Length: 473
Image (cartoon, rainbow, N blue to C red; front, side, top):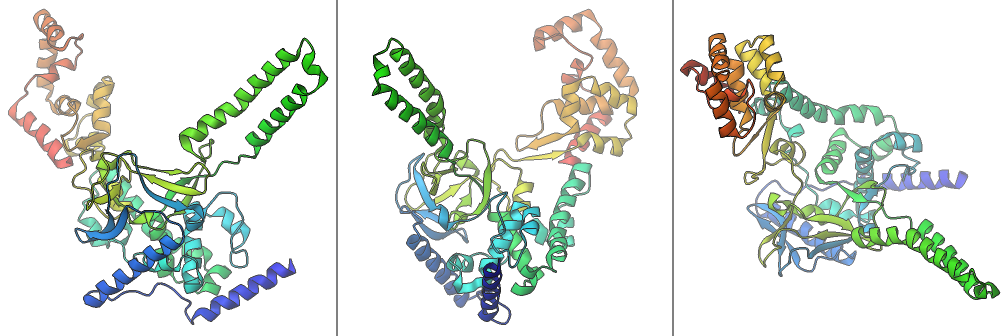
């Protein structure tokens, strides 16, 4: 215990020796030739460091595409081909249930109470403060120092998004505000710890670390603990060997015993071999750790690359990035997909929107908006609820590039129709001729809502339907 305390004090003293304010990222000039030269030098330093550390990306090189830095293919990368391999020891990783990596600065109790993203931000801050003493110094120096994510927008800029029409929009705005306030509350919570005082961490520096983690961290598979299946298999093999070379092997039960041993081996080793072949050395329990992966974080997003993935190698010693879609030709930017998310999520977490994303969607509670805007009576909403599909279509509407679902205008016609129009629709739907026509047209039994598939209401009601759709969109 005494040795651990003395070692901790020595390390803290070393940290104070780095500089009066402790080492941190030296910002490049804001613009001009010197700024470009500074950025390029740091990228070159990152690439040399990555290569010397065993990060394998022989078909990629750093470059700029449309003013943004990224990775360019220098040779053909086929679909399913390896884009990059990153040794586990080159990644910053945190895992639930582990002790504090610097107990002299942050107690095990405080560490265990923090979520993985906060733990990873603390680990990043610690190495940023070490400066050149840190193994990750070249990578840290190449990390961005400014961010365009929504928590960094001003209140006036956020107001331009007009996130105040419905409960869904207000909820999203609250999420943005909560993320922006999180750094302040976290700083106040930990400012009394040795971690903050000894390293002289400012709130701006903490916000930088959190922003890096929120925008660049990924879930990585936890390595498999092979001890259990290996020991079980070895025990069965030793038992089988002892039995095979013993006098018992000549007994009438020998074949039965050997067959039972073979079956036991199959059921014990088989599932592990199958998982190993499919997933590599990842945890069958589905448990993931949170990590920052140098060089991997330079791969930009492209929704068309859905199917690219990050996996663990068979030995668990490397993380591998596999290409999707049609791969990449020489000279083309190599990208991955950040997932199927609406553009609001991309803007919140990464600071960009994908204008080419065909599956983009906007979700809102259209029903609430229409109720407030047009004073829809409650009995009309209750009536719509009887048609579950229509009710759900407007209760949480997903607006895609191709427009809203077909059920939306149908539901709006029912909600916005006058009492007289509703009565006329009801009378029309009850006629035998129309009932038969509906069956022939829609190949299903008609319901009270069926006429709203084809009926045209008054011009004023149809105008309200269009207005309700456009205002929410």
